[in-house]
Length: 324
Image (cartoon, rainbow, N blue to C red):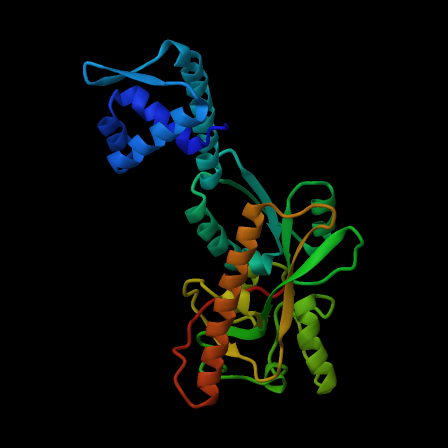
């Protein structure tokens, strides 16, 4: 007969408590169940494990070696359970990940916060990367995944859809367009633009609309990162077109955010090595990040639909980025 872990637990509880009633209390089970289990074990083994002396159960001589090994098994089970508990908290785990700035600024911090609520002891190594840095970052093993604003073609990298987003226009509070409920590409092109670069994935969307509409536009200032774009727009040096992910979840930065009339939808991705499966921690992060991004754009689209129906959108003043 092979003993189950439950039977081992019962035998050990009787050893420690010295009585069936005490063992039942230790295990938080009914006393008759412990008694029946002990009778079944002794019957199946063909040896008596305990003798009753002065009202207590004492191990028999022939069972002492068994008890010593049971203690060792129980210790190993305790060690295993302790290791599992540590994994459940993320202890001893370091998750290295990267993101392009548009997702890194507002979306990724929210996702990391959610991950650390689930795994409070996990360590995070978070890098903000340009698109052209992402491939080397993954292939050189610097990180497990990268949140991307663009799909690249590479045989060693897997690209998995993350979330769909869209673009918005930002302006200083005192700018003439700040009070608009929405704005068209033609109206945007009438003002100096900050950060529009047709070679950029997000910039290419707006540049494509300008080209289709045969609209000329001016870009006297170009800036790569969102904080710089926000500072320039806030000083009323021009308006900017940015992604809605940068807008989502950020505090008021003194800027007006205006939905764009034309379709500016785009797809984002999570990239990782094709020859390696994501860890459970990385998978949890991706799931959380996707939910955060979907919620953010859902709120943004909801506000835009409300405006189109003549409803008040509250005009959240939030800064964004000019480039991915």
